[in-house]
Amino acid sequence: MTIPSLRFLPCQQSTAQPTQSYKSTTPNPFHDIQLFKQVNLSKPWEAGYGKVMAAWVEVCREVNRIPGFKINKKPEGLKTRFDLLIKTHCEGEVASMRKSGTSEDYTERDLLLTDIKARMDDFDKTAAARKNTVKRKIDSIENSGALMRRMPMGNLDVQGDEKDDTPRKKKKNQAPSHDISCLMDTIKQGIDEKVKRKSHKKIETII
Image 1 (tube, rainbow, N blue to C red):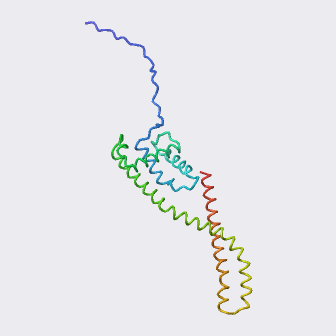
Image 2: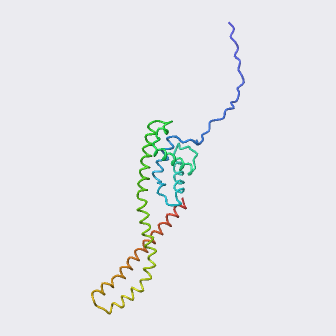
């Protein structure tokens, strides 16, 4: 019996390139869930005028630190994605969001969306009250100039009233002191708020 000889072919080097990790541009339920969790922490809807994108820069920085969050999105892209999902959620188009992923993923995502939307609505409801409070504080600070101009007149009234011992005049003498006390409290409150704003602005600049 003749044993056929084995023929060895020369080894050829594979031209296939190794698989490389890359960042996808298409978000999936995992990305949305992580995005919502960070948005709930950063609360960009509470950012003041001109500070919204700074809040989204923080969101982008934090989500990119999450292991497995491999999606190539800038702060603007994350904001656009979030706004779209909120709009879709509000319109009740949940079915269109269930094209992929597990039901558990989408259940968690829907719960997070509902919680965020409730927080946003609560913030909007109290916005008018906050604006009125700020306006009153600003008006008080602006009126401090008028109170300062009234102080010399108040001093003259005090000096003139010292010559009159009637109860009515003595009661009138207490008004300038009350105005001065209110003035000092208003000025102090305005200075404290200004210092807080400057401190907050420095922190945002450092970040």
